[in-house]
Image (cartoon, rainbow over all chains, first blue to last red; front, side, top):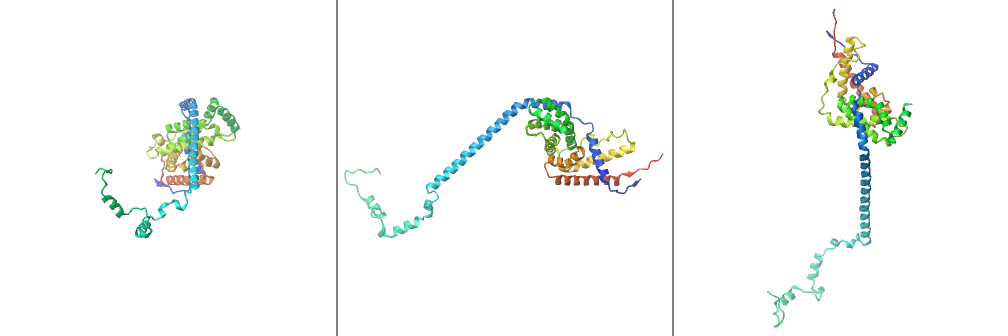
Length: 140
Length: 193
């Protein structure tokens, strides 16, 4: 027994070998007659079902389009109304105007204090006043 | 001639003639079945693919134009179905026992030694085909078994012609290596009488 040397397989040999292998594997193979029977049965039973399914798909697509359009219209309308009401005007955003420091400043400047405003001292005086006889009194 | 006959059958089948579709089935089912079998190496799977292929073809007949050749279109459906099947099962697939049998078809006309050698080559190549990737394997099967042109294979696999050439090249290279390795390892037997 001796080992053969490797020989380059020619293209023709390779083509022949591959073709021969594939044909040998599938030679004489046929699908069984039951396959056509099953295909025919599925075609017969599937036609109305398929049509129903197709119609359902069409209606689903139309409904999805309608919902999409309505949502888009609402967004456009809302955005447009917001613009017409100055939605994006700079004064709309109250958080840009600092209120606490201004209030502190006003409270310190007594001269600019509104005349009709109640300060803490006046409130204490009102609370400590004894009610006049016969006047209504809140329950303690 | 065949395409015009197909076109007539297709137009009849499109109008709901099941007999015309049956004629198309009889014409193409064996080819589709053998292609699916060569890809999957499983008779049951090949029958399932063939069945589903023709059901889908019937439902999609409205999209077929008169000038279309039906063979590549049917194979495109069958290859896609085979791919789905292969993807689900290839991790756990075992080689069927009949894939290891010695081919008997050539024993009628060849000497026993030549027939044995051919059977060994076929077995080695069949096993080497199984080690190829799905795309390379299918390209080889469509080219060598189906006899499709490169353009038709490109249509079936939905890829450019250059990609088909590349897959054929690499698949052939791997099978060539298998053949050469086989020739190297096969012992040369001296027969003494």
